[in-house]
Length: 224
Image (cartoon, rainbow, N blue to C red; front, side, top):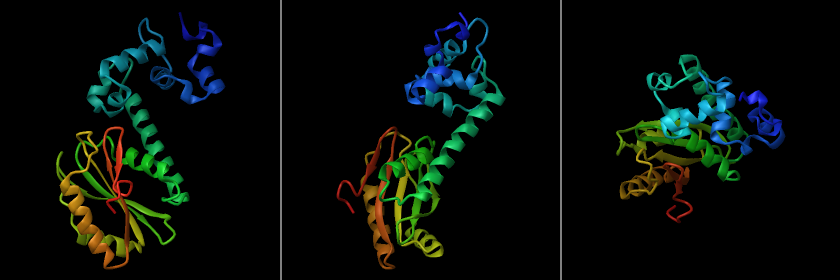
């Protein structure tokens, strides 16, 4: 049976319009993106097949171009569209965050930083630089490491903060392993950065460690 023959309230597009996007399953959202099915499968069945083949929606979104194009009904055009959609989402969060005060929108800040770093295959250490009213100046990726380590130099953080006139910073890095629990090395480098910036009256407001679906805050744990 074609999706057009389904009851109107069960069709993905109509369901989104009447109940909102959050009411749709991963397969239904993916079906709207796919638009059409493939060889005896409607778009929703194809979407379920792809999610089963790749393991999850996230793994589908993270797939390399060649692996992605091996999926039924997929190709480079779909890959490009999907990656463009993801980048639009990141830029949307970026614009929202710039309009807000980072400390008065902690959940938005987390969402933005998770979107930036959660799916990276190597460790990335970045800064969210803020002015004296805690408005965002810039998000800047500064250091890149292997899967389990990154070389972080406080002097480069100080130089960047001075260059951009930051009054405060939020530190953030990801754990590609997916485990967000901070290491002893994470705490030590945070103390070094805090001491270096403190000499210039630049505050470290938080250090967030981004894992797989979890973000740990140093400030919430009382470590800053």
